[in-house]
Image (tube, rainbow, N blue to C red; front, side, top):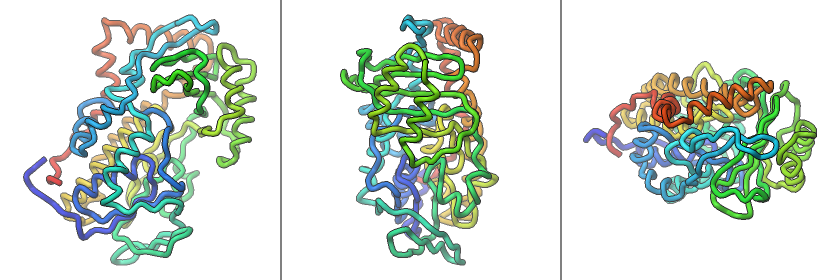
Length: 402
């Protein structure tokens, strides 16, 4: 940080979405004194979710400057190695912890909670509401809400995820921006029948994969991750029963623990189901509206989406501080600095589906041979640098002191 100081106390910013990107931006803007409102469609902050990781010096600097590095470490999963197994449960290859869990790993819900608790007395959080229209005027954005009264803000940031309503309102229909990557992913809680303790097991058959993981040492609970290759499906994202039927059909007859996982699926109340996809937009900003995180450069899995979102929030707030709140200058700087970084991380996510669910037995064996080699002591250093390459491919500017 420089000795230069900057205040954004004159700026009213609306952030749509309180997943991870929203609270991250709220924290970074609050450090500069901006007046921040976060609106979230869910009735409360979402807990649980997948584990997310951070890796490399860029992530560490951003989280340290945000003041949350130590707390993330205190609440990390401490996940160990995970293993690829045969149908009989015998291990084929061990995947190093740093490959799957980075330098530090934390549940998405715990990360959001940390940032929310740091900002709840400095930002206004509105749960159970959402943006329905955005009208830009010469001096701001007039915002209509589903429940609340209309309000005016200087800037609006869409941090509302892969299926962003903000992006749809300002940048056009989702079909223009979402690229389907030939796979679907599902996650839900299952009983810890395998007695796992901060480790996981992964079993693949051509075009489908079942993983069972235990991230927190709970002897009773584990998490299931299902990935399958598919043509693009038509389904209602709000119809959990239909999604369960899709999974039951796609994983019928699969070996290893699949029958017990499908049995748990019938009673699951926390099902996450979505396409493995990426978001590509021509621009991340338009007028007084900006896109952040998955809304602007999302990847369902494998693209270090949480790390990119947090870095993006740091850069966006820093550019606004550097420009004294001038959104035209700040948004241009944000576009320039984050676009290539985000694209580099997205490239990695293109491999997520084929890694978990290779299309043939031959590809499964080839994957296992490659990761057996990369996991060897001989290549351990090289492998760590490889996994950090995209996460560190940005030079952070010397932003004003908060």
